[in-house]
Image 1 (cartoon, rainbow, N blue to C red):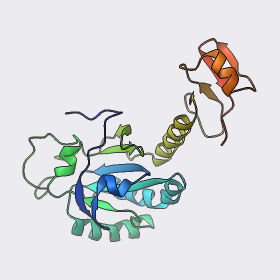
Image 2 (tube, one colour):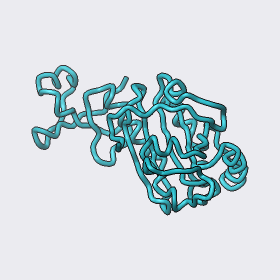
Image 3 (cartoon, rainbow, N blue to C red):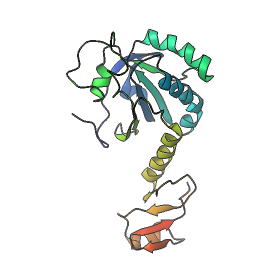
Length: 220
């Protein structure tokens, strides 16, 4: 069954490069980013894991735990980490799930449920659909899914931007407009009446249309 935004992220236990975890327990009260890869020792994925290592302090600031997944064994992941360090300047400083039996990839609907066997003998093309970013909230619900083709490296600055938006809109009754960046004006949520908006946003707002009410970004 396809996973959708708002669904509970499936729980699982798995071996990782930092030991065995139970996913929901590992997340605790944090947000989470699970990003997946079709095979170890592939070029685009090598750049992605290195980039995520460099950006990890930014995710830490936002109370976001990062975890990778690749369709190979933990031992292969550890060998791959040396290549990532050599070519990208940093090795993964977050756990990477070993999915040699494909169980997590199938649980998250990245491979067909009828897929059989293990990662042995499978090529990146066989696993090309294992290229998804899941952002998961503290309530264990899926907040975002981004699916990429094998030939296009992911933009993790965009993942950070979306997390900033989701964390802001979870706290305040606002939405963020196209290309929004932190600090820019936001939209008062459509569910908020003008009467309630006057109470929540006493400084007022601009409204090019009655249904587009722009206000300065709320601050904690």
